[in-house]
Amino acid sequence: MKQNKFKVMAIQMSSVIGDKEKNIQKVKYLIDKNIKEETDIIVLPEVWTVGWACSYFPKSAEDVKTGEAMQFLSSIAKSYNVNIIGGSLILKRNAKLYNACPVFDKNGNLIAEYDKCHLFSYYGDNEGEYITNGKNPVIVNLGGIRVGLSICYDIRFPELYRAYAVNGVDMMVNVAAWGIKKEIPWVSMTHSRAVENQTYFVALTQSGELPNGDYNLGKSAIIDYKGDNLAEINSGEGAIFAELDFNLQQDFREKCTVLKDIHEEYNVEVK
Image (cartoon, rainbow, N blue to C red; front, side, top):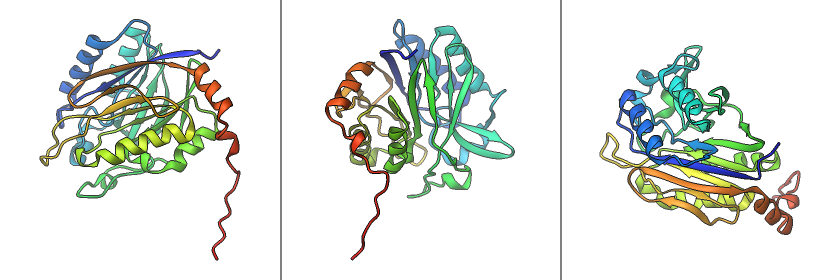
């Protein structure tokens, strides 16, 4: 049975580069400090166990079943009776590394994994040298709510989110470690994905300093189907919280039938 309302908490944090244990303790502290009663889902940012430092990815990689961070997320889900979208971890499968978003249900069961489809290897970053890209978008069902998953650089590919929309998602999530010099793209693209697909959107990134003297942006938000911020945080560490009302979202979709007006094909004529 689908829930009509969904209480979401998103954690913005500054990862300690390359120190998984400190980052696990930091996440535990931020959850313990900020979680509210009857929270339905917790969302964490991209590569929170290691920070955005691609050369550290191999050392931080862990097994899906036995990894320290994976077991930690499972225990948090059970302890608080909450679903967790675990940001992203570096997961190892068959000798390959993936920037993967694990999802746990309220019983601590791993119910989905999304592997980042689009890898960022520009402006001195080299994610593609270490990480194997995913092939398929993933929608996960949480209490009857259909959630479309994405990671950071995926946000630049609107066709991914349109695929989610035509497959009936109720909300979308982008977990990121987004650079401070790209504020306008982050704000405009996350809000655009919400508006054009008429869906709630959790846009969560890291804050804090990076190894090269750059910084993560922060500026995370929970956005509604009209593009309004329901909750936001600028810089620093903390949590944002919002209650999503899916009846209101459906009413809006029925009054403004954008999703019904999508053509099955757009055959471009070049003249």
